[in-house]
Length: 94
Image (cartoon, rainbow, N blue to C red):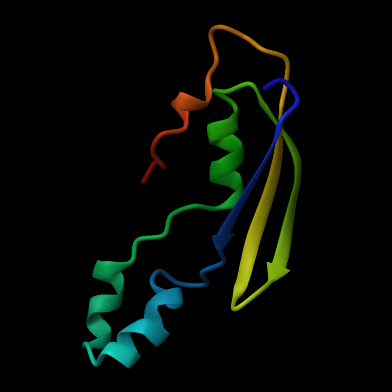
């Protein structure tokens, strides 16, 4: 739909695997597995770079505090175009 808003919420990680520590400790696994089981690579800058290939416009980035600190990105869809689609945001670059 034209002018639709999209909200993306993703964790802030000071280091890779930070958000998995409670889960690994609770399950009794080795802490060395954290980096293997959790690969979070999404940041506000990467979201903005992905948006360049779509018809989305950034409204704002914000830090929110829920169970843990999270980024919230709000985007707005611009006018309909045939060449640019949301399907181009399928994977996050490494």
